[in-house]
Image (cartoon, rainbow, N blue to C red; front, side, top):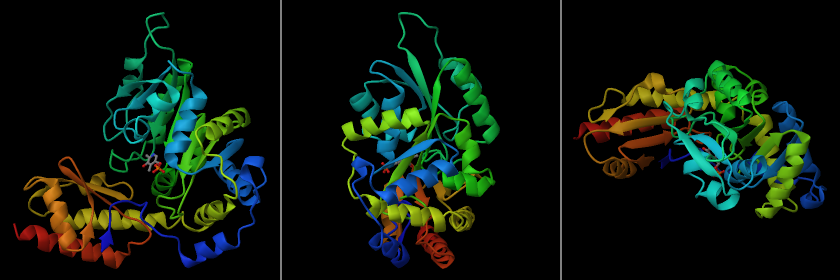
Length: 340
Ligand SMILES: *Cc1c(COP(=O)(O)O)cnc(C)c1O
């Protein structure tokens, strides 16, 4: 099976497992796990932030960030298809008690004017707005990248309004590899940033939240409250460290494979895709000849797994997918679609 459902499906390699087996560990809630501390410090330095804290998932880093920036009844502003809003099981309401104000972006990306249009005056009628969220790359937007200039303009409007900014950078690594803009330049614009090690970087578990020393200190309390205080977590942090050191540069291969796949299927009957919109490791294509679920079932029979969503199918490229796999996937798609 060529598994293109997500870049989360990768399994740790032998070398990564060796790093895990040899990790020096301690009790992380006591602040005594040297491998976790090394991961936090290395990630903070890479993002040019004062401090960082390791957690089991990207949803947790995002939701702890939301909670740390807000109090119940506050308002946060997000793009309508943001992971923080749409894919985290209602957590902003359940765990932080905040209101979500949505902006409809284009491929997940919105403008400074879009942000201005949802700001309201300070007045007893309104919730207190505290936070603006940006997702880069944007998952449902198709792995789309925020142009750094546009991001800076949005941040400027947010700052003028006295708001904090959180960057959901689960795939920030992909944005940096694709653009050459270092992670720290994106991170430098915002107050807090979360990054993920179990997507394209191929670690089995974990994300890091970074920000100021005071912010991270407060975030550690909410991590504990949300049940994310871990003990000998160096076992998994070692895999994240290994991923950080070894698997970032190769994301360019995933991007090339995604583009190759998009170009290889673009002229097929019954689907629509503009390969030029493929900026990173994701390919979304519209299915026009049958329900997307039906095509994904047929793809499965041809040895390709991909996720249908509405009238689209998402294919994600990652470190277990070679160029040969990509070419095989294109061939299988051509055989499958030309039958109909
Ligand atoms: C995957 C993802 C996350 C985190 O997801 P978890 O499964 O909780 O680790 C956060 N943001 C975006 C944009 C993602 O794609």
